Amino acid sequence: MKIRKVLLVIGIITSISGLIFHLQGQSIVGPESSFMYSNPDWVTFGIQIVIMGIIIVAIGFGINFIKKD
Image (tube, rainbow, N blue to C red; front, side, top):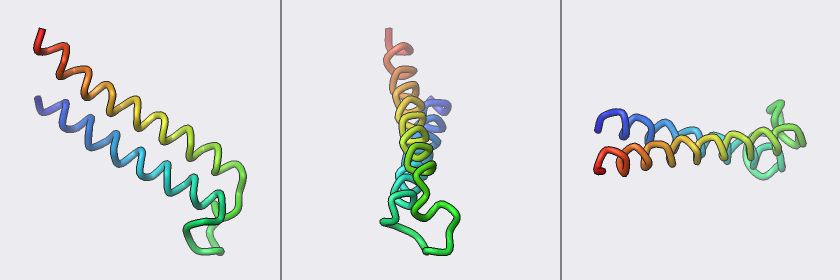
């Protein structure tokens, strides 16, 4: 049960970070002096990080279903 909570927290934090990176790459969030600001590479990196966070959250939920069976 403890590993499930850890995975959920890590996945949520990762997803939020990826969303922030994505928005910085699109020039929506963040200071203009940031190296991520208005950088198309970070738009792609942000999406990939969000997907990884969602996968981690899914694994956390999947562990719960596997343990019940």
